Image 1 (cartoon, rainbow, N blue to C red):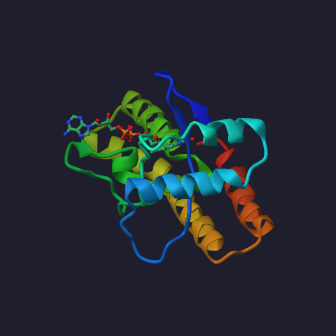
Image 2: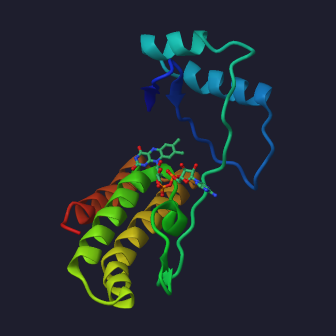
Length: 168
Ligand SMILES: Cc1cc2nc3c(=O)[nH]c(=O)nc-3n(C[C@H](O)[C@H](O)[C@H](O)COP(=O)(O)OP(=O)(O)OC[C@H]3O[C@@H](n4cnc5c(N)ncnc54)[C@H](O)[C@@H]3O)c2cc1C
């Protein structure tokens, strides 16, 4: 995926699987990205690759995830979004889930009742859906790491996206 950001920078995500969590310095990161992009023949990819200079800064991060156990609230405090369910990028749905959390929380607050009841209703509507996203994303990552065929990964992705297309 390649996206142009507002300030002229380009967001290009490239993932690799490593055992453990190796430290990858900037020179190595540039080498890896150049090598990855070298596999593509599309003119855009070649142009991007040519623009990587020895000063280009790469962001190097692990894919990480978390799923807070239910419930996500205590007393009057509730956590939503990535704080409750950060996911790897394999379904590109972390932001979508955060927005849904906010929508559902607003609906349940508008529905009225004691704080505990409101947050319980919120949790009932959100936990399983967030779990589906996090667990499926992590599983797709594992399939990738094991070198399973893309079709197998896509079957799982398709099932999850089908479930996510239902009302929440
Ligand atoms: C590279 C990348 C690509 C992504 N692509 C997608 C995608 O294609 N689709 C998708 O749905 N999701 C995507 N996501 C995931 C998505 O960005 C997150 O799931 C989403 O931003 C989570 O929203 P949030 O509001 O929970 O947390 P954040 O967006 O992280 O917001 C938390 C905010 O709290 C602020 N903050 C932190 N600590 C404090 C403090 N102590 N006091 C005050 N403020 C504080 C932070 O500065 C931040 O602004 C992507 C994420 C990354 C990193």
